[in-house]
Image (cartoon, rainbow, N blue to C red; front, side, top):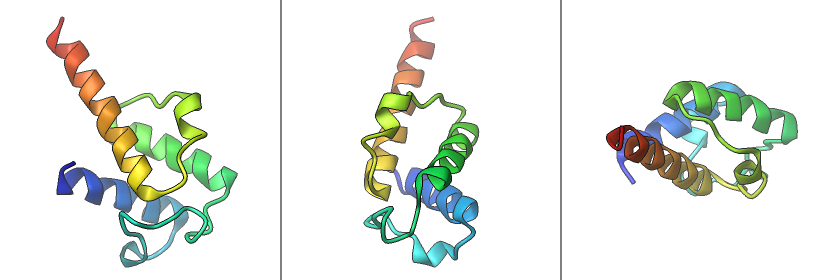
Length: 87
C-alpha cells in the first residue's frame, strides 16, 4: 500500500471528523477516534469523492479501523484500474 494512499485516507478522516491530522494514524481504531455511524457515513462519502470510487455498503459494515479503510480503498482502486484496462 502506498504512502500517498495512506496519507490521503488519513487526511479525509481528519478533515471529515475535524480533528488534527497528527491524531490519526494507520493503526488508529475508529472507536479511539470516536467515529460513530454518522461520522462513518460522512467519511464514506468523502472517500468516494477523494478517490472517485463507489464503496459497497456491505464492505463498510466490516471496517473498524484506519488500516482496514486503507486496504478497502486500495482494493477498490485496483478493481477500478483493472476494469478500465479491460475496456
